[in-house]
Image (cartoon, rainbow over the protein chains, first blue to last red):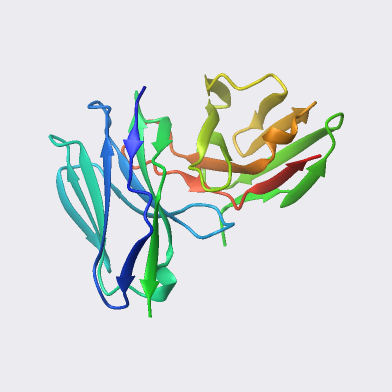
Length: 111
Length: 114
């Protein structure tokens, strides 16, 4: 069975620090990788997507992909209390239509 | 504001009821999805429609019946549900079979089966 794994946390970081969230996946055929943020009781909100090996930056967020190691990560710089949420890693498998989510990492940013 | 609209926001139904969840998007997407999410768990894929045709059914019980009347609408018909079916039901849409196809979620329907 294809798996997407994340440390469930909680990951606690002080305000202004860098938060590092990690995700590994089992399907070597996966092509597309997404990070979603989900506040309690709300629906997932897309933060970033990445398709090529390397880094992709968008504001305070940087996604990193290493297909050889089957590893994708999200860095959040200058973490804010409003960043406190569950971060879901999502991976396509068997083509682009099936998206599988990891269990999520709960991030707590301490003021 | 989300561009994928789900109604109702909350639904309470008995085990003998028939109800429907509705989803509408005007993003021009031709792939639409139903996900189920239990508390403190990730979303689990239920169904995928591609060009208004069912392309993926993740072995979902027949008491859940999806329907895609046109490219903008997606329904989920519910019948004879069980209390363990209580969850947040999420609709999503995306472009079809391209790299640039992240899922865009609606706000979800919180379903309680009594």
